[in-house]
Amino acid sequence: MNIFTPIKGILFDLDGVLYIGSKAIEGAIEAVEKIRASGMLCRFVTNTSTLSLISLQHKINALGFSIPIDEIFSAPQATILYLKNQQNPICRLLLADDAKKDFKNFHLSDTKANHIVVGDIGSAWSYTLLNEIFNSLMEGANLIAIHKNRFWQTEHGLQMDIGGFIDSLEYASGVKAMVIGKPSIHFFQIALDDMGLNANEVIVIGDDIDADIGGGQSAGLKAILVKTGKYRLNYVAASTIQPDLIIDSIKELPSVFGL
Image (tube, rainbow, N blue to C red; front, side, top):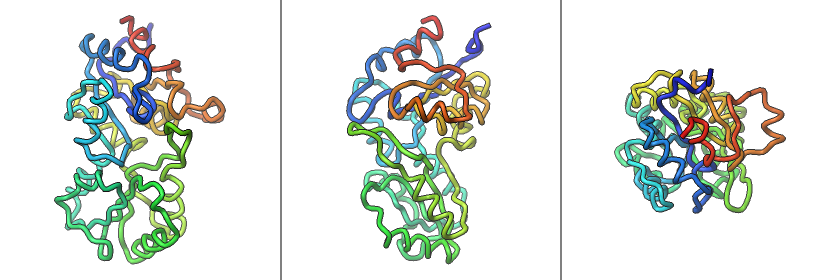
């Protein structure tokens, strides 16, 4: 029996699966179109925290895709949902300027925050900044990590991601971060609930053995790993996580379902 027989929906990771930087991966546009035409439900899930939701949609569709904004689930959007359920959140945002636009309805402060929201800020990291955040945590602020990825693939090669900075803040302060994006089970559940499907009816396809594959399987989904983006054979071979299937790229996905 095909392990993907009962599948009714697919969660697509974005960066490294559909595109890298400003270039769509070969065959990705056509693969998504074939999956859509088959009647499968699609959602696009990402830990990307450098772009606002509208900017993210514009980037994706400028590459040739046609993805509605309500099918995109980003870790910053999940963070916003989380903060809306907190009492009187005052936030310090360690985010790219464009991503901050989606947080405009929150009370923001760099000195009196009770929630420190950490995302991708590139080269803005410094010892001074880390120490400021450390002291806020020691004074009782909560640490919210939009994600905790180790590294990611850019057009110029691998780049260290924010996971190491989150680890250092946790170690120094003793404060455990609330991790919002993948591999959080809660993040995957948001997408499942929106699709109206159970975990055993959905697969996730990604390039990250930890966040995409491990996270998806922990949430009860089947998981397909692609050999594009941040995929590295040695890293995957050393992992205890076993994908349900490994394919060369998203281009092969329709054939997995006989399309």
